[in-house]
Length: 138
Image (tube, rainbow, N blue to C red; front, side, top):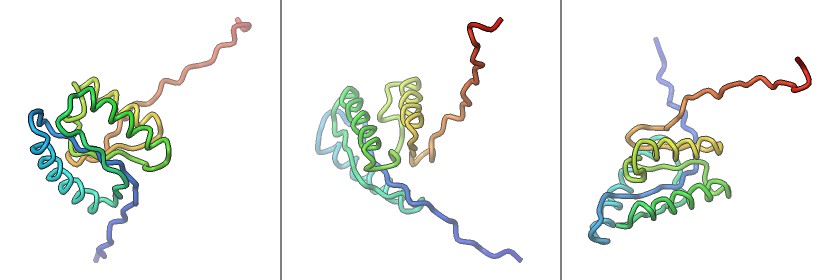
């Protein structure tokens, strides 16, 4: 007979990025972002993620999103949070290459990135171990 063990959750402090595809109205963008925040908060509560800062895109262009993303990485480096949390990478990336680049930037800095749709994003790429060659040996 198995006992039901409560799943252990870790408390990870997160910066939340809210973004929508709304480009016309700030009010519509705010409504969509508020719905997105409820969706993200449900995920965060279920998975032991603690929201420490919220960054909103509004109806600004992708160029503004680049600045927001850099700001979020700086918050991580300052120790305000340990991870980035968002609903979907689609809203902050120009294309697949840009998304991989952003995930790699965060993971390479030693931090974590979560999306509600995909969970924790990881690049399971093992670095190439290169043999150091002494130039004086032959």
